[in-house]
Picture 1 (cartoon, rainbow, N blue to C red):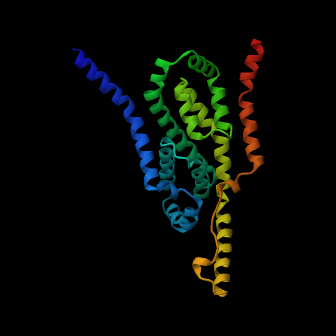
Picture 2 (picture 1 turned 60 degrees about the horizontal axis):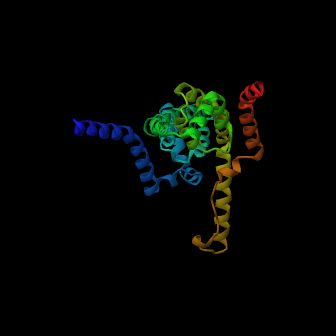
Length: 264
């Protein structure tokens, strides 16, 4: 009887951790194969005509595929969210691209939230000490405000904000609302930036072509031209934009400060 109970317990534990192992395994495989290097603006510039042609021929199917891909990279916690968000605006425009991004990111965030909560959240709750319990209780008391703050603040990685609430006992509906509405300001802003990315790529392409032609005229070998073609996503984000998001994040904490002020 004890052996049967032990086997059932092991099977239950394996089933609980299996989805997490799958996510970690897929993420490690993608990195090992080097596929994450394809999620870059340089690759986008090099394959721009092919990608935009496919989108033009199959617009709505491409938008659905983009949302599904965004859900996948979010669930796998790949650090390519900013690239994908700008890409959505570039391919589909700020409204449709932003909406597809919000949908995909929310679905992917919910997937990893459920996986982490099922595998690690229960174990943490069982073995939590007084400090962790106090942290969980404090977070749960103002969960929605904290969710909005974490989603709006530009200093917290998206993957970390997807996982932390699962370990702190945040409810599913609170997590969904905080994620869906919390990511909207940044998402539509970056999608709007992406809508103007075409002109940036064209300018880079023209400058690169002039550089190559000038060096060809001077007899310099193509491998020694020193011409570069690169796009840095950091160049598309201004300090003023980050300050605006930080301001929105602080506003999200106003209810928490007001509640603490009333108690004092």
